[in-house]
Length: 289
Image (cartoon, rainbow, N blue to C red; front, side, top):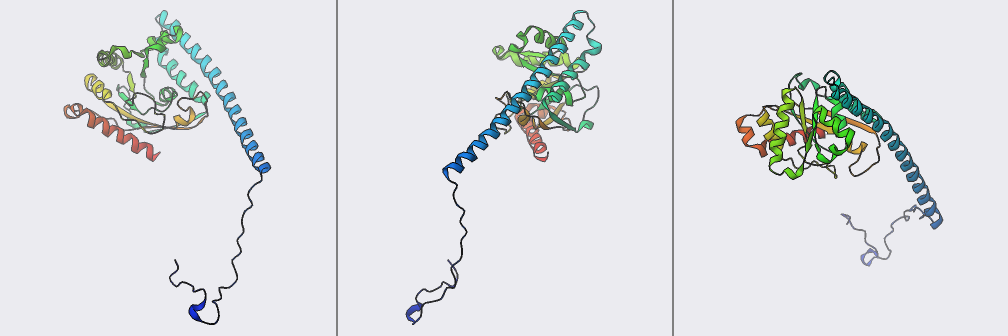
């Protein structure tokens, strides 16, 4: 309501108030049914073209990266059978990651590498958004890293043999309480070889894009192996290869390595608080990317 309302009728005066010319309103005409149909058709056509492009791009990615993966796995299995895998093991593992990154169209940017001490095995703690996180981390980090993987993946004859040969850990959910002890035992073996273990403490990929609560397993593994925790923030992989999608879109991906966290008796015991602090640091890093 205006501060000085205009009186219509002059409050008993002889002449009505004069308000001046009426404002001219330029109203936009609503599109006709024909025009609406045309707009919708153009949108659907554009969507169809984009989806076709993504299908073609994804198919090429799967062919190139998939065939390369088969070749790399075959080379690992053959070299392992003849006992000559060790000299080229890490080069082959890194090649697997780089092939997928390049084939997917991911534009990878890495920062914070000065926080990594060469020769030190870590428990790498990272957020998890996409299937391609594994390949991105393999390509981005200049240290030997290994992953936990579902036992079902190891049932693929060639791929499973190659994964076992390089030290990937088969995770069987049916192990129950024995699972953590099994992981710790294998993590110790990796650390003795100078290799780091990557743990996704969310436990699964985040579908919504929001970071899920962290489980405390990484703290227990680090405490029992004596390895420092290396927090790593991964950004953009969910857009390159969205969860629950087979389409690969390409795009910018950033990996930020945070300063390592060395556990004490106090921080090990306060596992929930410690993993919560690590989660907060990753969220801050992602917000600043």
